[in-house]
Image (cartoon, rainbow, N blue to C red):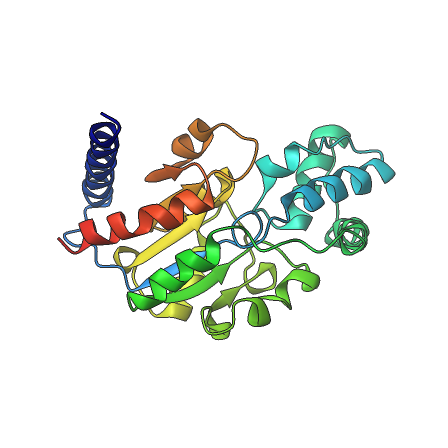
Length: 258
């Protein structure tokens, strides 16, 4: 009986993935979808760094008299730091901050983040990347972060998996997520078109950016937000955890090449 239940679950999963791929192609009017590259977000996808970010945001904004609950960091995740600060100031102070004001406030947040314990690599992500590279896919990173303490770790932590020439950070774009610009920049670096690109995200704003860029977007819900927020933001597939994503990859890739 247990074996039958497992078979039913696997069959249901395959059907859902097939439907998602068909819907994606119809939504964007693509005649084909043959992935050549995968663009990963960083915080909450490659590293379990979001708890540190959430606490740092809360403490930093508190110093300036801005109320930002730790949970809000997950809602604004992916947006460039200075843009998040300008948004919160607009909401609570009813005025526009200058770039320099926002930059100085962001430096406070950066300093607090640097004092946090090192973020661990997300469970399951190396297994997923190994499978993807074995499939011949090119891997890049697209992050709204400008935290050098994490960016500097990418090359060593994911040596042989991530192409160092295909990393997009907050310093590379004028408009961050939810604008499509970061993922458009990522595709320029990997020399791919949207129908050749898969994005792995975990945040609503990042999902919105990837979907707006026309990429096939898989959301891995590694934070406290409901999965429905990721679906509503435009995710083609929502997976509950990175280990689940690593386990599902073989099925998804098989469907793409069936």
